Image 1 (cartoon, rainbow, N blue to C red):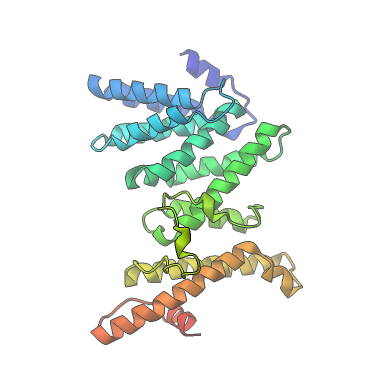
Image 2 (spheres, one colour; image 1 turned 90 degrees about the horizontal axis):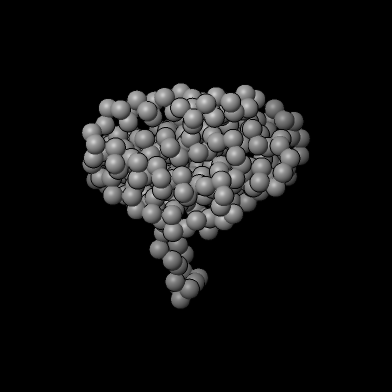
Length: 301
Protein backbone atom coordinates (compact mmCIF):
# COMPACT_ATOMS: atom_id res chain seq x y z
CA UNK A 1 0.00 0.00 0.00
CA UNK A 2 2.98 2.33 0.51
CA UNK A 3 3.78 2.11 -3.20
CA UNK A 4 0.15 2.83 -4.15
CA UNK A 5 0.04 5.87 -1.83
CA UNK A 6 3.23 7.19 -3.42
CA UNK A 7 1.66 6.85 -6.88
CA UNK A 8 -1.50 8.60 -5.73
CA UNK A 9 0.53 11.48 -4.30
CA UNK A 10 2.48 11.96 -7.56
CA UNK A 11 2.06 15.31 -9.37
CA UNK A 12 -1.35 15.33 -11.06
CA UNK A 13 0.00 17.57 -13.82
CA UNK A 14 1.70 14.51 -15.29
CA UNK A 15 -0.64 12.39 -17.38
CA UNK A 16 1.72 9.44 -17.12
CA UNK A 17 1.67 9.30 -13.33
CA UNK A 18 -2.13 9.29 -13.42
CA UNK A 19 -1.95 5.84 -15.07
CA UNK A 20 0.17 4.36 -12.29
CA UNK A 21 -2.54 3.57 -9.70
CA UNK A 22 -4.55 1.48 -12.19
CA UNK A 23 -1.39 -0.28 -13.41
CA UNK A 24 -0.47 -1.01 -9.82
CA UNK A 25 -3.91 -2.49 -9.07
CA UNK A 26 -3.86 -4.61 -12.24
CA UNK A 27 -0.38 -5.84 -11.42
CA UNK A 28 -1.49 -6.91 -7.96
CA UNK A 29 -4.56 -8.63 -9.44
CA UNK A 30 -2.42 -10.71 -11.80
CA UNK A 31 -0.05 -11.48 -8.94
CA UNK A 32 -2.88 -12.73 -6.71
CA UNK A 33 -4.01 -15.24 -9.37
CA UNK A 34 -0.55 -16.65 -10.09
CA UNK A 35 0.71 -19.98 -8.70
CA UNK A 36 3.66 -19.81 -6.26
CA UNK A 37 6.31 -20.71 -8.85
CA UNK A 38 5.11 -17.93 -11.19
CA UNK A 39 5.07 -15.45 -8.31
CA UNK A 40 8.70 -16.34 -7.58
CA UNK A 41 9.67 -15.64 -11.21
CA UNK A 42 7.77 -12.34 -11.20
CA UNK A 43 9.35 -11.25 -7.91
CA UNK A 44 12.85 -11.98 -9.22
CA UNK A 45 12.14 -10.17 -12.47
CA UNK A 46 10.65 -7.14 -10.72
CA UNK A 47 13.71 -6.85 -8.48
CA UNK A 48 16.01 -6.97 -11.53
CA UNK A 49 13.96 -4.30 -13.32
CA UNK A 50 13.94 -2.10 -10.22
CA UNK A 51 17.72 -2.51 -9.85
CA UNK A 52 18.31 -1.72 -13.53
CA UNK A 53 16.24 1.47 -13.21
CA UNK A 54 17.23 2.55 -9.71
CA UNK A 55 16.87 6.17 -8.71
CA UNK A 56 20.41 5.99 -7.35
CA UNK A 57 22.17 4.96 -10.56
CA UNK A 58 24.27 7.57 -12.36
CA UNK A 59 25.05 5.41 -15.41
CA UNK A 60 23.60 2.48 -17.32
CA UNK A 61 23.84 -0.67 -15.20
CA UNK A 62 24.73 -3.09 -17.98
CA UNK A 63 25.17 -6.24 -15.85
CA UNK A 64 21.64 -5.78 -14.48
CA UNK A 65 20.20 -4.82 -17.88
CA UNK A 66 21.70 -7.96 -19.43
CA UNK A 67 20.29 -10.02 -16.56
CA UNK A 68 16.80 -8.62 -17.30
CA UNK A 69 17.17 -9.43 -21.01
CA UNK A 70 18.34 -12.98 -20.26
CA UNK A 71 15.44 -13.49 -17.87
CA UNK A 72 12.92 -12.28 -20.46
CA UNK A 73 14.41 -14.51 -23.17
CA UNK A 74 14.06 -17.48 -20.83
CA UNK A 75 10.27 -16.94 -20.52
CA UNK A 76 9.39 -19.20 -23.44
CA UNK A 77 6.15 -20.56 -21.96
CA UNK A 78 5.13 -17.85 -19.47
CA UNK A 79 2.89 -15.44 -21.36
CA UNK A 80 1.50 -13.83 -18.19
CA UNK A 81 4.97 -13.11 -16.85
CA UNK A 82 6.02 -11.56 -20.17
CA UNK A 83 2.95 -9.34 -20.07
CA UNK A 84 3.62 -8.27 -16.50
CA UNK A 85 7.33 -7.72 -17.14
CA UNK A 86 6.60 -5.17 -19.86
CA UNK A 87 4.01 -3.56 -17.58
CA UNK A 88 6.75 -3.22 -14.94
CA UNK A 89 9.02 -1.50 -17.47
CA UNK A 90 6.20 0.81 -18.59
CA UNK A 91 5.49 1.73 -14.96
CA UNK A 92 9.13 2.70 -14.53
CA UNK A 93 8.85 4.91 -17.64
CA UNK A 94 5.87 6.62 -15.96
CA UNK A 95 7.83 7.18 -12.74
CA UNK A 96 7.97 10.70 -11.33
CA UNK A 97 11.78 10.54 -10.99
CA UNK A 98 13.53 11.58 -14.25
CA UNK A 99 16.53 9.46 -13.28
CA UNK A 100 14.34 6.34 -13.16
CA UNK A 101 12.70 7.28 -16.47
CA UNK A 102 16.05 7.70 -18.23
CA UNK A 103 17.29 4.36 -16.89
CA UNK A 104 14.04 2.72 -18.00
CA UNK A 105 14.59 4.07 -21.53
CA UNK A 106 18.05 2.48 -21.59
CA UNK A 107 16.50 -0.80 -20.44
CA UNK A 108 13.73 -0.59 -23.04
CA UNK A 109 16.26 -0.07 -25.84
CA UNK A 110 18.23 -3.14 -24.71
CA UNK A 111 15.04 -5.25 -24.56
CA UNK A 112 14.00 -4.33 -28.10
CA UNK A 113 17.53 -4.97 -29.38
CA UNK A 114 18.03 -8.34 -27.73
CA UNK A 115 14.66 -9.98 -27.09
CA UNK A 116 12.48 -11.96 -29.47
CA UNK A 117 9.27 -11.35 -31.35
CA UNK A 118 6.89 -11.93 -28.43
CA UNK A 119 8.58 -9.30 -26.25
CA UNK A 120 9.01 -6.83 -29.10
CA UNK A 121 5.31 -7.13 -29.93
CA UNK A 122 4.47 -6.03 -26.38
CA UNK A 123 6.77 -3.01 -26.65
CA UNK A 124 5.10 -2.16 -30.00
CA UNK A 125 1.65 -2.34 -28.37
CA UNK A 126 -0.27 0.98 -28.60
CA UNK A 127 -0.35 1.32 -24.80
CA UNK A 128 3.44 1.15 -24.51
CA UNK A 129 4.07 3.38 -27.53
CA UNK A 130 1.54 5.89 -26.21
CA UNK A 131 3.66 6.03 -23.06
CA UNK A 132 6.66 6.95 -25.24
CA UNK A 133 4.62 9.71 -26.89
CA UNK A 134 3.48 11.05 -23.51
CA UNK A 135 7.05 10.96 -22.23
CA UNK A 136 8.11 13.31 -25.00
CA UNK A 137 5.18 15.65 -24.44
CA UNK A 138 5.64 15.82 -20.68
CA UNK A 139 9.40 16.35 -20.60
CA UNK A 140 9.95 18.61 -23.63
CA UNK A 141 8.97 21.77 -21.76
CA UNK A 142 10.78 21.01 -18.51
CA UNK A 143 14.04 22.58 -17.41
CA UNK A 144 16.96 20.38 -16.51
CA UNK A 145 19.64 18.25 -18.15
CA UNK A 146 17.93 14.94 -17.33
CA UNK A 147 14.65 16.09 -18.87
CA UNK A 148 16.55 17.08 -22.02
CA UNK A 149 18.21 13.66 -22.15
CA UNK A 150 14.81 11.95 -21.79
CA UNK A 151 13.39 13.90 -24.74
CA UNK A 152 16.45 13.08 -26.88
CA UNK A 153 16.32 9.38 -26.02
CA UNK A 154 12.58 9.11 -26.69
CA UNK A 155 13.00 10.69 -30.12
CA UNK A 156 16.02 8.51 -30.93
CA UNK A 157 14.19 5.33 -29.97
CA UNK A 158 10.88 6.12 -31.67
CA UNK A 159 12.68 7.15 -34.86
CA UNK A 160 14.99 4.13 -34.72
CA UNK A 161 12.14 1.68 -34.20
CA UNK A 162 10.00 3.37 -36.84
CA UNK A 163 12.77 3.08 -39.43
CA UNK A 164 14.13 -0.36 -38.52
CA UNK A 165 10.78 -2.13 -38.19
CA UNK A 166 9.01 -0.59 -41.18
CA UNK A 167 9.58 -3.74 -43.30
CA UNK A 168 7.97 -5.73 -40.47
CA UNK A 169 5.00 -3.45 -39.89
CA UNK A 170 2.55 -6.37 -40.11
CA UNK A 171 4.15 -7.88 -37.00
CA UNK A 172 4.97 -4.64 -35.15
CA UNK A 173 2.61 -1.91 -36.42
CA UNK A 174 2.99 0.22 -33.30
CA UNK A 175 6.60 1.15 -34.07
CA UNK A 176 6.09 2.65 -37.53
CA UNK A 177 2.58 3.97 -36.78
CA UNK A 178 3.77 5.95 -33.75
CA UNK A 179 6.74 7.36 -35.67
CA UNK A 180 4.46 8.23 -38.59
CA UNK A 181 1.89 9.94 -36.36
CA UNK A 182 4.50 11.95 -34.44
CA UNK A 183 6.08 13.06 -37.73
CA UNK A 184 2.67 14.29 -38.90
CA UNK A 185 2.30 16.20 -35.63
CA UNK A 186 5.52 18.05 -36.40
CA UNK A 187 7.68 16.45 -33.72
CA UNK A 188 11.31 17.52 -34.40
CA UNK A 189 13.07 14.18 -34.77
CA UNK A 190 16.86 14.17 -35.25
CA UNK A 191 17.67 15.67 -38.65
CA UNK A 192 19.45 12.54 -39.80
CA UNK A 193 18.55 8.98 -38.84
CA UNK A 194 21.59 7.22 -37.35
CA UNK A 195 21.59 3.70 -38.75
CA UNK A 196 24.30 2.67 -36.29
CA UNK A 197 21.67 2.99 -33.52
CA UNK A 198 19.18 0.75 -35.32
CA UNK A 199 17.43 -1.19 -32.52
CA UNK A 200 17.84 -4.56 -34.18
CA UNK A 201 20.94 -6.68 -33.70
CA UNK A 202 22.81 -7.23 -36.94
CA UNK A 203 26.18 -8.87 -37.66
CA UNK A 204 29.16 -6.50 -37.82
CA UNK A 205 30.11 -5.34 -41.26
CA UNK A 206 33.43 -6.56 -42.64
CA UNK A 207 35.54 -3.65 -43.76
CA UNK A 208 37.12 -5.94 -46.37
CA UNK A 209 33.86 -5.74 -48.31
CA UNK A 210 33.92 -1.96 -48.53
CA UNK A 211 32.66 -0.76 -51.88
CA UNK A 212 30.45 -3.80 -52.43
CA UNK A 213 26.78 -2.76 -52.68
CA UNK A 214 24.71 -3.85 -49.70
CA UNK A 215 21.89 -6.32 -50.44
CA UNK A 216 18.38 -4.96 -50.76
CA UNK A 217 16.87 -5.02 -47.23
CA UNK A 218 13.46 -5.95 -48.71
CA UNK A 219 14.73 -8.91 -50.74
CA UNK A 220 13.30 -11.55 -48.37
CA UNK A 221 9.76 -10.13 -48.28
CA UNK A 222 6.95 -12.09 -49.88
CA UNK A 223 4.96 -10.41 -52.68
CA UNK A 224 2.11 -9.63 -50.25
CA UNK A 225 4.48 -8.20 -47.63
CA UNK A 226 6.26 -6.16 -50.32
CA UNK A 227 2.90 -4.65 -51.27
CA UNK A 228 2.08 -3.77 -47.65
CA UNK A 229 5.47 -2.20 -46.95
CA UNK A 230 5.40 -0.20 -50.21
CA UNK A 231 1.88 1.00 -49.42
CA UNK A 232 2.94 2.05 -45.91
CA UNK A 233 5.92 4.04 -47.18
CA UNK A 234 3.82 5.69 -49.89
CA UNK A 235 1.18 6.68 -47.33
CA UNK A 236 3.84 8.20 -45.08
CA UNK A 237 5.27 10.21 -47.99
CA UNK A 238 1.80 11.40 -49.04
CA UNK A 239 0.91 12.43 -45.49
CA UNK A 240 4.19 14.27 -44.96
CA UNK A 241 3.83 16.10 -48.28
CA UNK A 242 0.28 17.05 -47.32
CA UNK A 243 1.49 18.35 -43.93
CA UNK A 244 4.25 20.28 -45.70
CA UNK A 245 1.64 21.90 -47.92
CA UNK A 246 -0.38 22.92 -44.85
CA UNK A 247 2.77 24.45 -43.36
CA UNK A 248 3.04 26.68 -46.44
CA UNK A 249 6.22 25.21 -47.86
CA UNK A 250 6.64 27.56 -50.82
CA UNK A 251 10.25 26.72 -51.57
CA UNK A 252 10.73 23.31 -53.19
CA UNK A 253 14.25 23.11 -51.74
CA UNK A 254 12.76 23.09 -48.24
CA UNK A 255 11.03 19.79 -48.96
CA UNK A 256 14.11 18.36 -50.65
CA UNK A 257 16.06 19.14 -47.49
CA UNK A 258 13.70 17.13 -45.26
CA UNK A 259 15.86 14.24 -44.03
CA UNK A 260 12.89 12.01 -43.22
CA UNK A 261 11.51 12.41 -46.75
CA UNK A 262 14.98 11.74 -48.16
CA UNK A 263 15.19 8.51 -46.15
CA UNK A 264 11.71 7.44 -47.26
CA UNK A 265 12.70 8.21 -50.85
CA UNK A 266 15.67 5.88 -50.45
CA UNK A 267 13.38 3.13 -49.16
CA UNK A 268 11.04 3.64 -52.11
CA UNK A 269 13.97 3.26 -54.52
CA UNK A 270 14.91 -0.04 -52.84
CA UNK A 271 11.29 -1.16 -52.93
CA UNK A 272 11.11 -0.17 -56.58
CA UNK A 273 14.00 -2.50 -57.42
CA UNK A 274 12.47 -5.35 -55.40
CA UNK A 275 9.00 -4.80 -56.88
CA UNK A 276 10.39 -5.12 -60.39
CA UNK A 277 11.98 -8.44 -59.41
CA UNK A 278 8.73 -9.62 -57.81
CA UNK A 279 6.61 -8.58 -60.82
CA UNK A 280 8.98 -10.30 -63.25
CA UNK A 281 9.13 -13.47 -61.16
CA UNK A 282 5.38 -13.66 -60.60
CA UNK A 283 4.67 -12.99 -64.26
CA UNK A 284 7.05 -15.70 -65.44
CA UNK A 285 5.55 -18.17 -62.96
CA UNK A 286 1.97 -17.22 -63.70
CA UNK A 287 1.48 -16.07 -60.09
CA UNK A 288 -1.37 -13.86 -58.95
CA UNK A 289 0.30 -11.53 -56.52
CA UNK A 290 -1.88 -8.87 -54.95
CA UNK A 291 0.22 -5.84 -55.85
CA UNK A 292 -1.87 -2.70 -56.10
CA UNK A 293 -1.93 -0.87 -59.44
CA UNK A 294 -0.55 2.36 -57.94
CA UNK A 295 2.40 0.51 -56.41
CA UNK A 296 3.22 -1.13 -59.76
CA UNK A 297 3.08 2.28 -61.45
CA UNK A 298 5.44 3.68 -58.82
CA UNK A 299 7.87 0.83 -59.36
CA UNK A 300 7.84 1.26 -63.14
CA UNK A 301 8.02 5.08 -63.13
